[in-house]
Length: 131
Image (cartoon, rainbow, N blue to C red; front, side, top):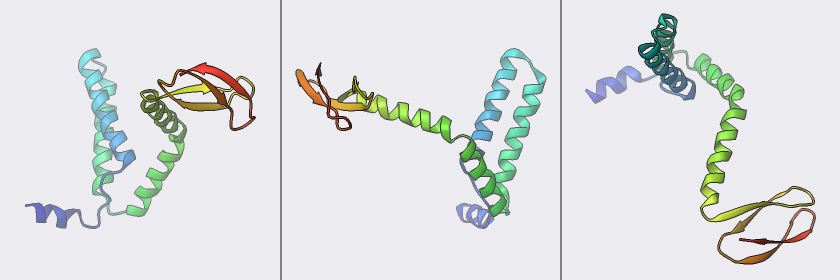
């Protein structure tokens, strides 16, 4: 069975970021329909799901890759914002992030070191903070 599926999918585009977005958007729209009973969301949700599967099984890999590239370009600022927030949350466990009072450069300092003198690597200003 697995071999048949692999043979069937050979040369087809498969799943990418845009396809996942379409699939999840369609599912969410259908869930909204079950709560608020807006028929248009149901139709749009199914259209997203069908188009997502069409993209997965498409043999026109070049066109699908261009669509995905355009999607990634349009959503780069949003994805960058969330990636930055995720990084900052991970750093928050072990480090404090301070801004230089002079040039506003962000400076990362390890936690639990007491009162320390911080020197800005950009403008060389020193200031004292508790870490």
